[in-house]
Image: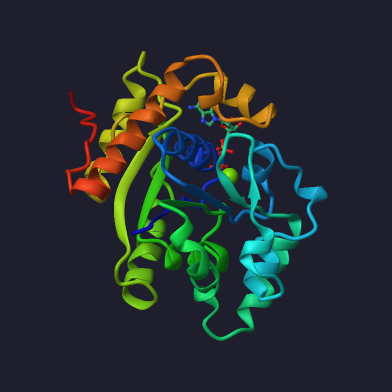
Length: 264
Ligand code: ADP
Ligand code: MG
């Protein structure tokens, strides 16, 4: 059975794209066949996996509008992950899809024929709660919310949780909210922990382990078109490896997800 995970938060800069790329690389290293879907018109995931969105003939845009078959658009990345890429054309997909019936189901329908080829699909949602994110949440079985550990991180979380709950009621009753993933975490200060404690109290949202530490390796990696897992050993890569193991144990063996207790 294929597991489909959406990574969503309408806030930009919270490490959605970094989480998708790094987690996918970690899952691939654990011998899983991994597909990543770039749903952001900016194409940052596509770019960070070594493909220039400006040089691609077709993308997830044509797949969503029904003008291309998904299998004709997939590309392989250097690290062995398969990518359904985005180009700036995707910015027009919101408007095109809005005129169509069943618009929230376009991605789910498009992925159906290829699901058997993959063990895990990870979807990188754009920084909005528009039609593209609704497509991501409708196609997924579970959703993970990266949360940057800084003041005001909670702003917008309520709205995101309402969207998840609406999707559960209307387009995808099986969607599970796994919890928040702390990103850009600074273990040296109590600030990150205070922020997480506040968010988990306010929204009774599980905080997943391990927190992803802030390290300069991520910026270096995405600029070079590779993930942090391809380079030298570093604590960021290690954290995503642990997250991958945590998720696989949950999906495959029904183990409880390991959570992080900000109070400790
Ligand atoms: P989003 O997709 O939510 O907009 P990105 O994944 O693009 O966020 O990350 C935003 C910026 O933060 C990028 O420059 C990325 O390299 C950087 N970044 C992400 N995670 C970390 C981390 N753990 N430590 C340091 N920088 C990070
Ligand atoms: Mg992004």
